[in-house]
Image (cartoon, rainbow, N blue to C red; front, side):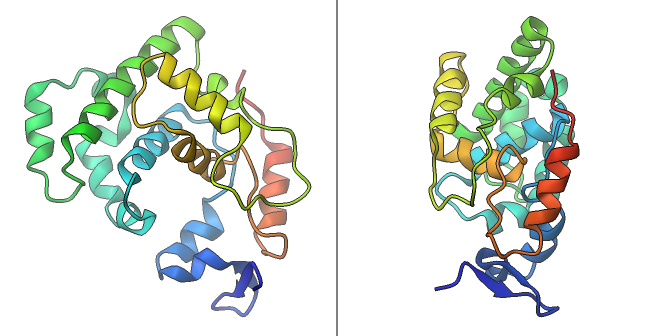
Length: 200
């Protein structure tokens, strides 16, 4: 079975893009392109945590609701959330109302704030786990780097950051380029990664 399928324009894209109509734009313009913005990195780690046990389609459909509920994933603001905010979010029909995952985002914002205070940058810390360039896309759900990053985040008190969750984050945020070899977006992502200035 080929790892690509034709998109609406007939050009080959990663097979998964065809699973839902809203995946096309996400695949073509977001997935795999490198991100250095702290807020976006924190948002993606948070949403990957919410996805645990669910499909990305479910999370992507609710992404704007999540952004509204968590103040655009502003780390400082979310770190100050308390019991009233948890109660508010548990009543929010537009997001996944899972107490453990909601509390994990708040906890992780607090841990991110500590990391920024200590190291100066969440982005720089995360990008330290960028693996060596791989010759072709991987067909795995974890990597040595995602295992190491997961272990370090857990050591620092983060929650819902298992190796699979972290690897999905790394794929989406451009720490790896896992677009299929024949996918028309792969070369664009690789060019963006070459031009990207790593946080440091």
